[in-house]
Length: 91
Image (tube, rainbow, N blue to C red):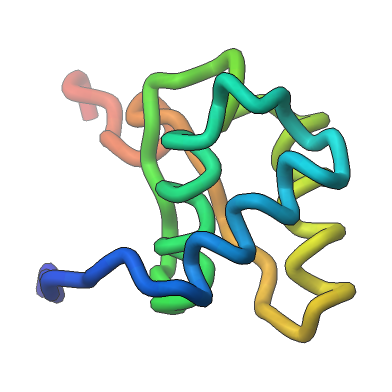
C-alpha cells in the first residue's frame, strides 16, 4: 500500500539542506536538490526515487548526504533510481 502525505519545507529542512552544501556534498547551485533530500530525510521516507543521477542518485553523493545525516542524528536515506524500483516487465 502506498502511503502519501504532504510535507512542508521547514526551517529545519532548510538548515539541513544548507549543511549538505557547507559539507561539499554538492555545490550551491544544487540547493533545490538538497531541499528535496533534507525533506525526505526529516520526514523519514522509506525510499527516495529520482532520475537525477548527477546530484541525487550517485553513490558518492548518497554517502555524503548520509554522512551528514548520521552526524546530525538523522537516519540514513535510501536513494534509488526508478529502474531499481520498478520490476522487470517480462516477469
